[in-house]
Length: 176
Image 1: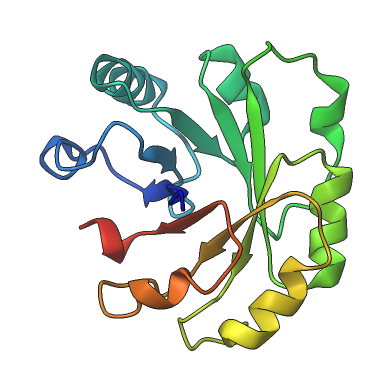
Image 2: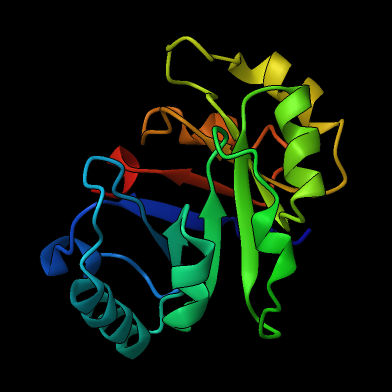
C-alpha cells in the first residue's frame, strides 16, 4: 500500500529566516499580512529569492496582480474575497490559484474563482466557523477539487488527519 504524502502549506506574516530554514522543500509558503495595508515589495522580492534558493514554492495572499508581477508560484484567495476580477488576467503555466472556504456557498465561489485547491476550515480550532471531522468530511464530498485541511492542526491531532481524504494540510502553529 502506498502512502500519499500530504502537501503542506505554511502561512507566514513576516520574513523570519530562522523559522523558514526549518521547513522542508515540499512546504509551500503563503505570505499573508492583513494587519498592514501597504506591502513592502522589496521584502517580498527578498523572501521570494530566499525561498527559490531553498526550493520552496511561494504564494501571496489576496493580491493577484502583485503575485503575477513578482513572478510568484501562485496566489491564495481568502474566504472573504468573493470578487472575480482576477479571471480577466492571463497567467503563466505553473501559476496556481488556491482559496479558503468555511461552508458550501464559499466552496462554490472558490470553484467559480478557478481555485485549483480549496482550504476548508476550521477543522480543529474551536472558533466561530469550527467544523470538526464529520462536518469537514461532508463538505469535502461536495467538491471535486483538491481539499486542504486548515485550522488548529497540531502534533497531537495529526493522526486524525489520516482519516480524511485530503490533498494537504495548512497552518501556522504546526510549523513553528
